[in-house]
Amino acid sequence: MAGDSYEGDTAAQRRTRGIRATGRRRKPRDGRGRAVRAAAWTAAGAVVLGAASLGFVYFKLDGNISGVDINAALGADRPQDVPNGSLDILVLGSDTRAGANAKYGRDEGSARSDTAMVLHINEQHDKATVVSIPRDTLVQRPACQGDGSENHRNVPAQRAMFNTAYEVGGPACAVKTVESLSGVRMDHYMEVDFAGFKKLIDTLGGVQMTTAQSIHDKSSHLDLPAGTHRLDGEQSLGLVRTRHGVGDGSDLGRIQLQQAFIKALIDQVNSIGVFSSPKKLYDLADTATSALTTDSDLDSVGKLTGMAKMLKGIKSDDIQMTTLPVEYDPANPNRVIQIDSKTDKVWRAIKRDEPIPRSATKGSAGDKTDIGGVLRAKGKPTGSPQAGAAE
Image (tube, rainbow, N blue to C red; front, top):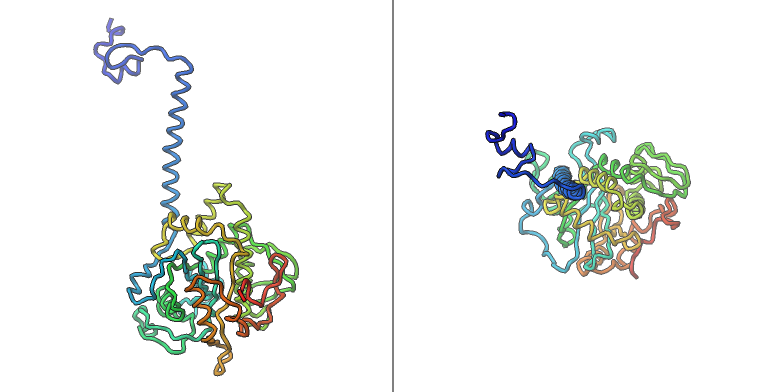
């Protein structure tokens, strides 16, 4: 009967009936064979799906990062790149009030660099030095490519505040200004704004700090009694921005608060075990990449991951914190000027991949602030002398 005959069936139809395309029936499968094959297909599916998910994650995180081609902007007129394995990175905190940053005040003109640090990683990648550059430092700003407007002409300035370099020419001009005053080539550039910093701290679960005295500053929205606190993102941002709530209200005092906070932040990152939790690692990576603007040599997840692996062995005790040696400008007490004989020692040590000697900062204005004792990290007061300075 027609219903019993398979002569007219296609190969696909015969496969659905348990018949091979040759017309021969398959050998019945035992339970073990089916289980092995099912396991193999499950494993293969997991690999495919896992690879697809990983690809999506990398694609998404790569898309988060903003990159700036510093090398193309600056060209060849830069300090020599010393290939000894050490790294020098300019890290800026931007005070832009655009977008989510609008709640932190009105934007009076273009964004400036609210915080500036040169991070030097030694040749062995087991020690680091941070040189904070006060934003009010008067410098010889080199000619920078601005945005073409009347206020942003491509001209140098003899006594310009350091933080105006970013305002005039963005990241490239900030890098060029640092290289001009230091003679050290910056290998990389990183920037984070207020909103990105706040979100990053919240994703980490806060940072623990101990205040030896209360801090109240309406300008930075900070209100902390004396004691131990786990600071959330908003409180952490208030702490690193506060000037009027502690010490003499100077930017030099605030820098020391920032340095103490950075050490506590590094301890927090090392303590939470992000690599043991895929979700925690992804959340942190998603937040960090969204918060960052980097040079084009770092604007991918792979490159940032490589740097993170390189630096993961550095603990807070391995970092020497230093403020550029300055003194108050006799012509304007709201500005500071470099002490050339001392700043030369700082940058010479960086070039030689050596710790900065204590003599380079002793007696500078940053060494005389009355911020000591305001914060305690690991049971030790902040403030002078500069942390980790060599004699």
